[in-house]
Amino acid sequence: MQEPYTLPLDGLVVIDMSQFLSGPYCSLRLMDLGARVIKIERPDQGDLSRRLYLSDTEIGGDSTIFHAINRGKESLAIDLKNEADLAALKKLIAGADVLIQNFRPGVIERLGLGYETVMALNPGLVYASISGYGEDGPWVMRPGQDLLAQARSGLMWLNGDEGQGPVPFGLAVADMLAGAAAAQGILAALVRRGIKGRGAHVQTSLLEALTDLQFEVLTTFLNDGKRMPRRAATRSAHAYLAAPYGVYPTSDGFLAIAMTPIPKLADLMEIEALEPYRDNPASWFTERDAIKAAIAEKAATRTTDEWLAILEPADIWCSRVFDWNDLLAHDGFRMLDMLQTVTREDGVSVETTTSPIRIDGVRARIDRAAPRIGEQSDRIREEFGL
Image (cartoon, rainbow, N blue to C red):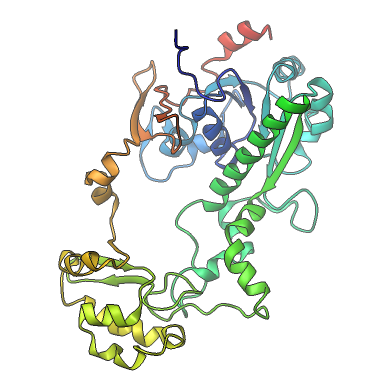
């Protein structure tokens, strides 16, 4: 008889002492792989991201961002300054598999829950720490906030057109990537624990995650005389790539064109201005501003669909630029089935995303919404004898 399907991390208990985005994103990924995540929150106000509003929309008293990143988790209210609560938390940690924390360096130690202390309680624990800039150095006490990490990473000089100045990402990319890096390290440490029976301290930071994000272009920079890249003056999409790589306005929208030989594009789009560059591939980079300007001028003369009808059959790498309404309406997105509705007993209902990972063809779906502060406290205390 076939056993019931279970996710790979089924049965593992994750204690999430983090807040905001990086740590909770890490625990969300582990939960989507089957782990049970118990979120430790202050009894009075809980995770500060409950009040981190991206818009004027709140659901059940909490921000949409809190709901998005904490769906399916359990909440245990713990006052870390209360000796009885701290003792209960230590007892819970002693039987857990993973602990995640993203306090500013030094804070977790002052609370009596630093790595060395906790590993004495549970030598098999995988203990994950996410900081802003590492545990040492001149930036160690600086706020580990996404925009500030982007500012220090050099990343902003890759975005936008030359002359615009630094352009930040429109997402909390440092938080998300640091959370993903921590999850990757945790999974590796769990594998080693299964083989050698010992835990580990997994460490990463927002700055390390953003440095890794730039590994391709930083390697070029380091081995190219440390020359700073120059973004295209118009339609820039990658500081190191030649024309036509970029996004071009059409008469009714926008068209993205990736790596494409200029002669082929010139013929298909009938752009006479590209003739001087046809047989000179080096100019596709050195003269990319002029090339992109010529393409943009021609692209604006037809609709996006008209251009796609010409370019796609010729195997040109291109795409309509979708907004979210376009994306959600398209069969290409719908077939992925990446949206779900999660609910809570108090009537809260949230439409949100699902796990980006499928295991054995199955995408994890946990239909519980993010918890209220301490919603599962009584049950968890009874279950673990806290």
